[in-house]
Image (cartoon, rainbow, N blue to C red):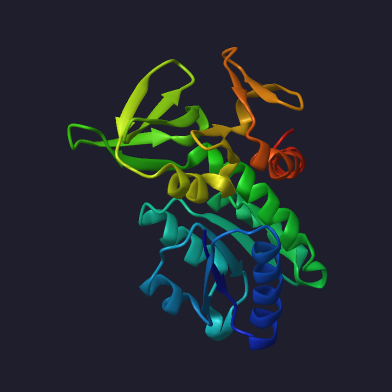
Length: 234
């Protein structure tokens, strides 16, 4: 997850950075933070998934105008506006703001990050090379599971489509973990979104498929599933 903080006052930049870093470390989320003191600096390298953008920057820079420029470049990142004047928030509809955060209540950043992760899994695609060498885009919110199939990986979608691609199941499990996937045994990584039922020995997915939970994975799976339900499940 790539996060950018655009804030002209160093004290606020540091406070916001500290909150984001603690959140991501506590939740074991891979992240990068870019700190910018002005909009010009940010627009030079506008590669971010989530932006915390001050509405009133130094030298007359306007956060709403920066957001408009960003949208015009075709970037799809989410924008959280930072402000000490909450009455300005009403103007954010023009740029489809994701959140407005009062600088007097920076704890609201945690809720914004929680909410962002919920939307992230709906939008994320991964690219895998199939057995013909063709790159396949796989949308995570319709990916039911990944399993080993000989020396390949089989990606099974909710609609029954399947793709056979190169890769390692352990590496795939690690990269998907932050998006609500878990490796329940040596051969299977499942999307916890599609779990219908869980007991002490197995999980049942929405298509009726039953998958045994490996003994060495049992305790960690229970913790991960509980955490996922707290974070993602509505």
